[in-house]
Length: 282
Ligand code: AMP
Image (cartoon, rainbow, N blue to C red; front, side, top):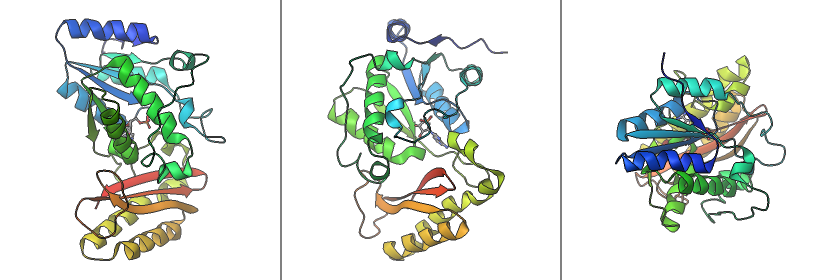
């Protein structure tokens, strides 16, 4: 049995714990999450514990990144199980602030990243990336780690965090970690818990279609033709709607004209009322 994981809920306690580590000359890794942890999150924690003397995992279901009618109220929450799993992975601290610790009464300041925050996910989830950028900025400034770890699963979020850290001179290195998938190729996600058995069988079609399109583009097929074929395949498999399916520059998600060997294919699609996202290097 591993020792129970220490949990702090106040910024002051987080800072005093990290200040103690700093005094001892230790490096600090931060892994921001919304909880309901799975192997995707754990891969970030492992990267951090390998590369740092101390690892703090944050758990905060950020109300500012959920739109009207989205699943803020029902988002899976299981802090006790998360803490147990993190203790087993040798994480050192969980920071799980309450909503009013993160956003006190009267707080109005927001961080927005025009362009990157408006395309793709931003187009279909207005306000989403301002919510993400604001909370990530706060977590980075609260903890001031050496390195913060983000998954390529949310590739646009990773690009946006790199941008905001550069723009705001936040002295934290941002590490991107590869997408963890199950054996069917489905990217692990806390929201996969919403899928019925039937939907679960259809879901891997999203990753398969992206994989075929990436291969076709690398083989010389026109990007527009390959993305149209992939969209049709996803709908044909039983998805209800494709919000977007696009090839973009890997570094900044600018639209891509022709294949240049440094692009990413990204998609969001609805399976019933569950929205899945995925992406791959092209
Ligand atoms: P979330 O709890 O969904 O906000 O995710 C917290 C962090 O875990 C984000 O940086 C995600 O990109 C990352 N993450 C979530 N799922 C995966 C996955 N399947 N593989 C890699 N990273 C992931």
